[in-house]
Length: 221
Image 1 (cartoon, rainbow, N blue to C red):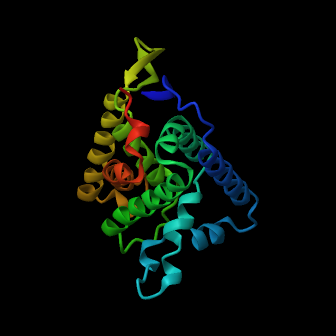
Image 2: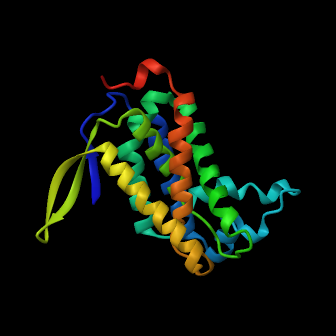
Image 3: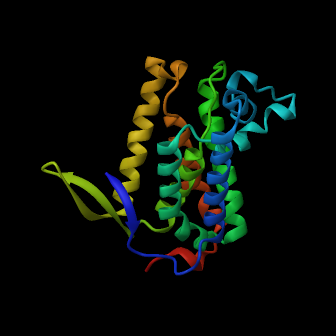
């Protein structure tokens, strides 16, 4: 399943979502132009083994890492999800609170992944955890919305409007299942997708998003 749009737009321009997308694209452009990409990644990504809570400078990658991406597919899929789901959540929370909610979701997601791979020297990077928080908030505020989704039927792509509640819960279950699997089969030691960050960011977003929003703004009715 791959979402392409939701059926109920906020009716407001998602300014912060737009700025976040432009910022991520700009930083990815800097990555591509870097003369020493390995050093660039090492400086701004989160390397769990380098974290020392007694040294604040080792904690800044919990923020900077969420603006890095590992390739075109990585940033393309992340920004696509952010654009589809971010506008409604931004309208429900408000521009400024939405920005901090995004950052806090990213930090929480990175931290949850970090707990399980604290000794790893492999870099963690990407906006997926922060965007997972947005998905959790979307489920909290707009479960009755429908998501236009590409689904293969008999080998051919079809676009079907699926309830957001089903789409997002299904996505979360996949992330959580794969995240638990990485713990038992130790794939975290060889790199890959940060499934636990996705699942953790989603739970963070779902639980805490309500405290960020005005009650009257998000119920669909």
